[in-house]
Amino acid sequence: MPAIRRTRFTELFWRAHRSVFRASGGRIGSRVGPLPVLLLNVRGRKSGVARDVLLNYLRDGERRVVFASHAGEDREPPWWLNLRDAGEAEVLRAGERFRVRAREAEGAERERLWSEVTRRDDAYVEYEKWTTRRIAVVVLERV
Image (tube, rainbow, N blue to C red; front, side, top):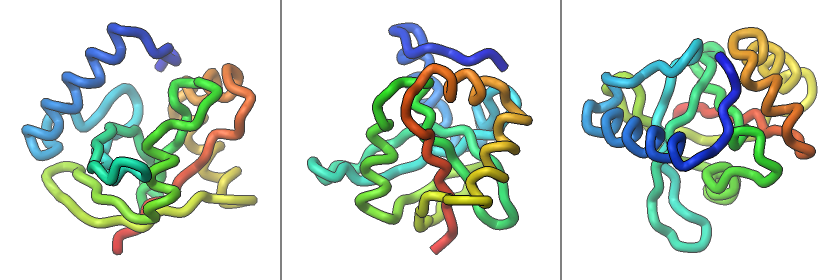
């Protein structure tokens, strides 16, 4: 799937997609391109307000793995900053809600997971080229 840039149109699409996904309990809009989608709900590190974000993910055994690509922008996505501080969040996926604990993959595990996502969706190759930061690979494990 081609990499996308953040524009007003993509922001509107993402907002509408998130609303439909949330309203359907994660049953409608559960795939965008080659990867499945989950809704991550995490509290803001400053505001304390719960916020939702739709993320593509890989399944790694019982774990879900998400990528803090932020569409190739040079700044970390707010959801990742919040999750890194909170450590835990809630996931909605395919009609199921569950709590998760998050950690950043490192070393060989990160390389394996990054290789897998770039094999499945070449947009992540582009995002990596567009940014100067290292894109976090985030492992979500059920609590």
